[in-house]
Image (cartoon, rainbow, N blue to C red; front, side, top):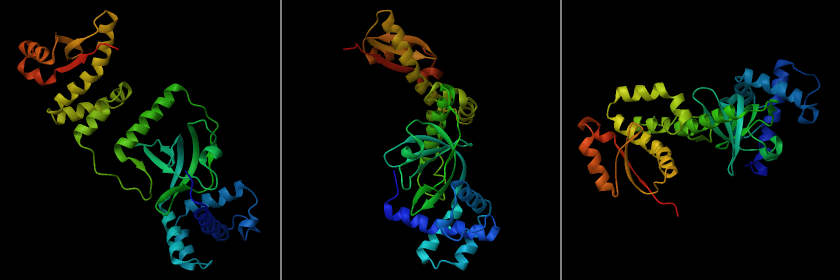
Length: 293
């Protein structure tokens, strides 16, 4: 979850001189001529905030090149114009990176690497955490700029569920973003969108207007809608059947109701087709209730 040691050293070699240059340009603090002169994190944050308020200063730094950096090093610095700054929910530690969740619409999930220390050591093991951060591209990966400002906020179950829904939506829409600048992937098909919106009760409530729009635009999606809803309803119906002592068999569902049953799939399909209006035959969902071992 971290950059390699050499890349961490390279990052600070490039980033700290840029902050010193920003300080000189804007006369923020006196007596800061090298990284050894940094007095505290608050001062560094002040330089950093001014840098990303005026990112064109990166162009002048590269043009002047006061520290005689190599071309490849200057290109890394130029890439920092593609920064992402804001409030992020640090949502999950994964093996390859840490998920920083941007909750703005539409939500995005960034895979971020630590620097000297793993982010778990910096932020602690208990997530989610809301923090201010600046995300930067670095050699095809995403890092943060060495400063995180966590908020002292705890989250209840409802908010955590919102974070989970946002994370699932972000992954569905864009995947995990692991490089900057980010360009959106190809738009999902209507079928993929509908299946995602129907995935859970909370997402169905959240995206009900989008579900209606998709179906109204394309009536052929009604079959997908009823089949996906049938899968969901089958779990609840199967539980109720077991509660009253029915432990096996085949069942046909239409709009929350069992409309036919049988000992085989073929028998159940035949029974359902005999009673369902022709225009609704494609909406019937067939499932098997199996005896628990």
